Amino acid sequence: MRADNSAHLVTSAQRRHEFTRAKTIKTLRELDTAGTPVTFEIVARHAGVSRSWLYTQPDIRAEIDRLRSLNRRALLPTTPARQRGTEASLTRRLEIALARNRDLTNDNQRLRRQLAQALGQLRAAGLPVADEDAAVPRHSSNTIGPC
Image (cartoon, rainbow, N blue to C red; front, side):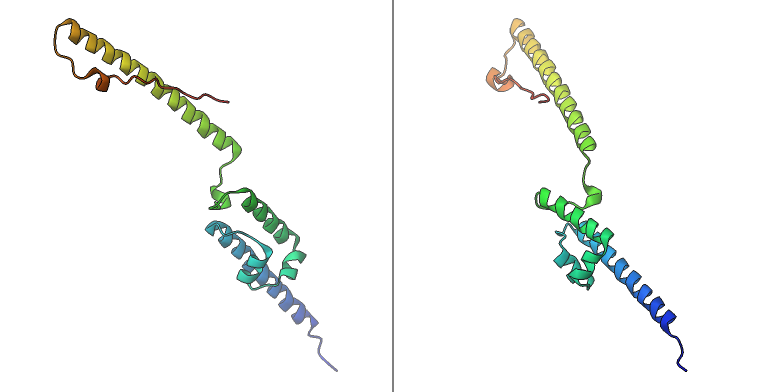
């Protein structure tokens, strides 16, 4: 009578399957971290698995599709997922930059007025004034506001 080794075969197959999944997920993370474009071909080659196996794993397939679509939309160089800004964070950064720009514009206008007053006081006191064209720029500062 033969011994039933099917339980060992099932256990071995399960371990091999989990090892392959872990290796594939690690490969996906490494490719994304490196900013490498993610395709089924590249993942299969780097993980040492077949493309057909990748297609049979719904969660891995979905992640490859997600990363692939992100890479298609992004301009080179691609940015790893954990470093990509959300729309809310990018909007907030833009708001901060615009506010800083407004503050700097106001400071420039205030300093120009102070310089003009100081030059006027020097002129009124009969003191020599340096080259006015170099001291007071003739252009105005324009700020582009939110669209």
